[in-house]
Picture 1: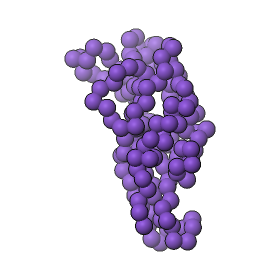
Picture 2: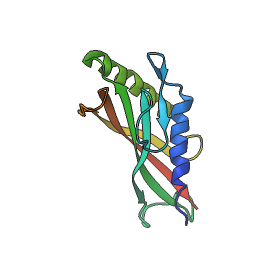
Picture 3: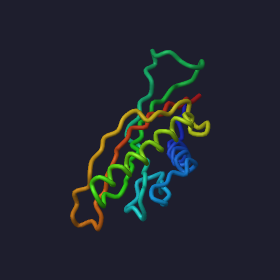
Picture 4: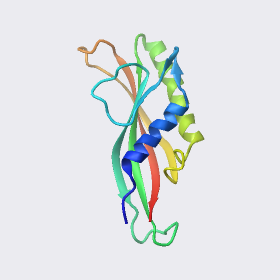
Amino acid sequence: MPAPNLLTIATAAKATLDAAAITLNGNTLRVYATEPTGLDRLPAATVRLDSFQRRNLDDGEIELGSVMWDVLWRVTVYTPLDEAHTGQEGMLTVLAAVLDAFDDDPTLGGVVDDAVLTSGEQSFTDDESQPRQLVVMDCDLLTRARST
């Protein structure tokens, strides 16, 4: 049985966030379906494959002859850290909208059986060579897709 089309899932996750029209201080969230070499504007989010697992053969099948795939994506959200207080407020605003976007479209437009943002961890860039410091939120998006 073929594996799920991973590029289609990444593109659907991007489309879900694009459709939410998330903004911060008048700037629309720029979403990338793959990891870019650089961010051309903020706020931004990237979607990249983290890991996958085919369900064990002994696990229950949803449909006779089908195989379920758990695919974990890393959705990373970036907001500017111009000042500590406003930078973190900006991240909280954007993150709430990202959570809502995936909760409002749990099948990513019908591409997967289920998608849920399960966890996240905040950090800050520490590369002083960069022109701007960032608040970074690495989130886990778990998708379940069936192949027949």
